[in-house]
Image 1 (spheres, chains in turn purple, green, cyan, red):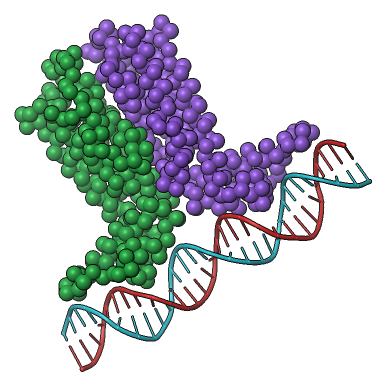
Image 2: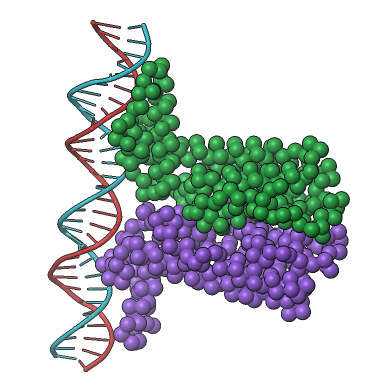
Length: 234
Length: 234
DNA sequence: TCTACCTTGAACTCGTCGGTTCAAGTTCTT
DNA sequence: AAGAACTTGAACCGACGAGTTCAAGGTAGA
């Protein structure tokens, strides 16, 4: 930790080391902020975690506030991109709807349940009164961008006859809720790490309930049919 | 603000004023903590908000930490009691299941959406790493007590043939998720105050989806029947 | 080799906050 | 009236943290 500047980055162009240090500072800042909150974190600790001197931190990102903003938005963008990518990949390429939805649910659940995601959520919720503009970076400008994208996909599935719903945005909202709610609850606000098996259980349960509510009439026979085995994914 | 000690509390019995002051301090502490977080809040401000001198605060509740704990648990207990009371009142006394569930959902939604509740949630989420034991006060010792109580009620409804489910705890978890998820999302983490009409819409939508998934086969005709008007409660 | 930029560690300023002390009331009890 | 308990304002202390300054290197490019 104290030894920085891996020699591999030496022979590069001038500003290569700078960029590495900036990234290290941002990463360290997120770690320390996530653990202590904005007020509780001190810049000395961030500098130490980044393996960098304190003036260097102020040299790269002037304020503690801007440091906070940048470190948050950096991971928020990565997180949002992952969620969106998972949602965009929801297609019915001839396959089963339940399978596609379960796949999506599992990917989203793993994202939601990750340490980075829960730390990010905790931080933003905690400091939303001090930094209200961070909501836009994490969720999107006006409404939740993940829900929007999911609503688009669900609407196409409904048009294709694979689903049965009137309000795709409402259905998307509830799909996300069926996932994130239990994850938040069981992980006790991100305190307890959820095993992958538990995430699978939550995802399967969410999809089961979702399809019971919004499954297409064609596949309705599943409702009274004997349930698929519950714990694991087949 | 600077003028303290409303004369109305003067002529009481000796310890009456103490209790009033203690309560005022706890209330003020919650307000200030909710707005600034644990580290961000300073005792001077709490004392000022309570209309009380700073030593009085330390006289009643020694530490800043114990002050925090007490102010949080006080609010949390009231909140939890309200939720539990709402859940306990879920009975099917001959009436319609949808009506009873909608009633419950609306009461819970109004609780969730209140300023106190979202502030409480924000605070606990923010400081859960510093005060992990507060989760027990807010949620219950091991699992969410509201979900437990709701699971009991749902199980009885299922036994009475009004609902159709295998895992009442899972159904309860999802019912709560269908409520709290959209409320959290639409209120933007408690930043925006939700109008009562919006809360009604969320409650009705949650119950609709829940009954589509777990409604008893007897009332299944509702699934393809024309929807009830959506915005308001009839 | 020279120069310009970065980094580093340490010290420093300045403000704030948690917590205490104290003398001077104020109110209730006896 | 006497005394106990509580409150108050103000001052005080020690600690700590944000942000700056500075002299001493280090490194890259010309």
